[in-house]
Image 1 (tube, helix red, strand yellow):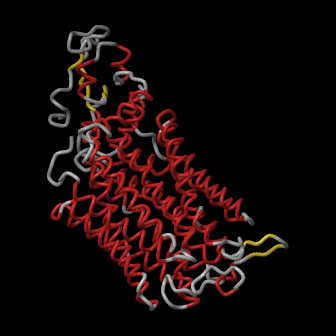
Image 2 (cartoon, rainbow, N blue to C red; image 1 turned 90 degrees about the vertical axis):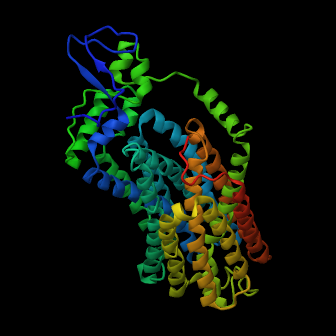
Image 3 (cartoon, one colour; image 1 turned 120 degrees about the vertical axis):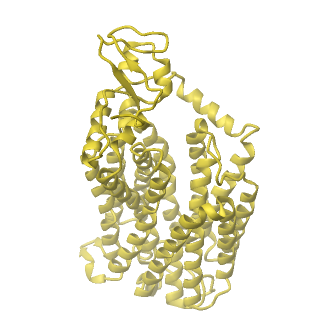
Amino acid sequence: MMDTDVDEKSSLLSGHESYNESGTRKVSGERRKAVIYEEALHMCGFGKFHIFLLFMCGWAVSSDAIEVLSVSFLLPAATCDLSLSSDDKGWLNAVVFLGMMVGGYFWGSLADKWGRRNILIWSLLVNGIGNLGSSVSQVFWLFLICRFFSGVGVGGSMPVVFTYYTEFQHKSRRGAMISLLATFWMTGNIVAAGLAWIVIPREYLSFYSGDFIFNSWRVFVALCTLPSLTAGAMFVLMPESPKYLLQKGKEQDAIAVLKQVHSVNKSSKPFQLEFLVLSEEDIEGCSNLKICESGFYQKLKSTSSQLIQSTLRLFGLSLRRTTITLLLINFSLAFGYYGLFLWFPELFNRIDKYGGSFCDSKSGNSTDNNTICQPGNNVYIDSFLTSISNLPGNILSIFIVERVGRKPLLASSMVLSGLSVFFLWFVKERWQSVLMSCLFGAISVVGFNMLDVLQTELFPTEVRSTSFGVQTAALRVGAILGNVIFGLLVDTYCAVPMFLVAGLLAFGGLASLILPKTTGIDIH
């Protein structure tokens, strides 16, 4: 039977063309129950479909991470081939985030019009093609343009894949499943570092034909396109989000997708679903046959007006302090993490060639010295260790977040990350630099995890999506400025960007102490 599986407020529909005051429909003596979308997800159960969906979406998330982080691993080897100065390297690290800012807006709008799955396929394709183009680019400016377009693709696939994935999850397990999906970013980081270690030092993988050069670091870039291209191809086999279909008035298509999920999961719960609605308000407010039959009911508002109102509310009296504080934290964390983490392979290469520390006076950029153009194996071993250092931080945050709390973990993570960067300037041995870099990677990832949770819990439902957009913009601006400033100063005043990163991380951590407590409190 479908007892508790269907909400008690679901309406019994009978007759065929008329409605009573509460929105009950008459359908020639036939009695049907309107099932709320969340209840339909519950009826589908949890099984093989959701596991397959996790790995599908996880592979897409990993491909985005590989694209964002891959350029940091090729910088040491590409220095001479592209005649890169430190300024150029800063822009190469930053341009993908600039593309993400453009792509996030562009693809997000299209996903609401054309569907989640379709936009996922196209954005992943743009990501892969842009990256593939950069692998054959023989000059810096063309390489930079291709990286920008690759970032445009990443800017679309990242938010859309989370939206698509979330719309298949029942509320009882949604938080845990989203957290699990987020860990695939770390997987992409490890894959990129491992692939760089395997491929880039192997000069025998290079190919030369006249003026055209396709050496080992370009082979690495080309291989990094495979995750996004294969993920895009695999999504062709996936159904569209049923919630998106329902919102577009395609009720029967949405029901067909849910039946498919139920069938693959082999759920023990019966699937008696003929009439599907988004929420209780759709049942209580239906007064039009066409709208009710499609399961689609919502008040029409101007999108631009709603966006402006939501943004203004973020800076209203009740949310202003929280919004501004989170903007500062996002900027500080992105400036510190991406402004340093993406430079680790380049800095490890300098230590490997010249000795000393990250900021040793001998560790300048030198395109006329051929030795720096041939990174040794140690560079990629050190980079791989730094990438895999995220693993303990991810595991730790999952197990202690409810015991310690979001705010204390965020504050302590950012302050300790700042301290680890501060002491990087003082270490003199290679093993000490690697150890402090791994410590930075393990601690800072906890801050990112806690920030994701807090941004969900601190804002009411009606402005939550808008707040994510505003906070993400601050994060990407921080990542861009962090890389550009580091590139400008690393050769002449290395201590300045290092201390700036350390100071901003500590400042962001202390600022988080004024955020409201959310542990154990219902979100609103």
